[in-house]
Image (cartoon, rainbow, N blue to C red; front, side, top):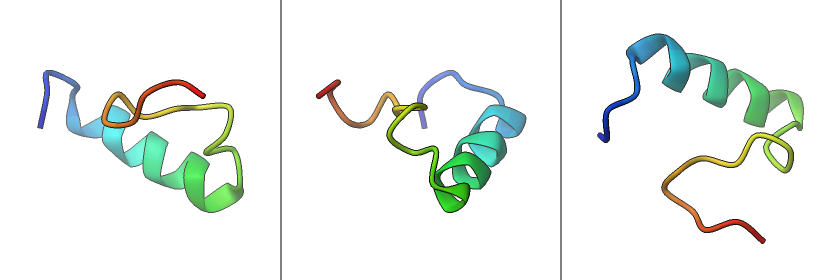
Length: 32
């Protein structure tokens, strides 16, 4: 858990589930 609010993590999870995980890269993984 970095410094992002819970809402950001929720949106990230939703985006990844929607298939936008490639566009919205989480800070946990390095940019490809």
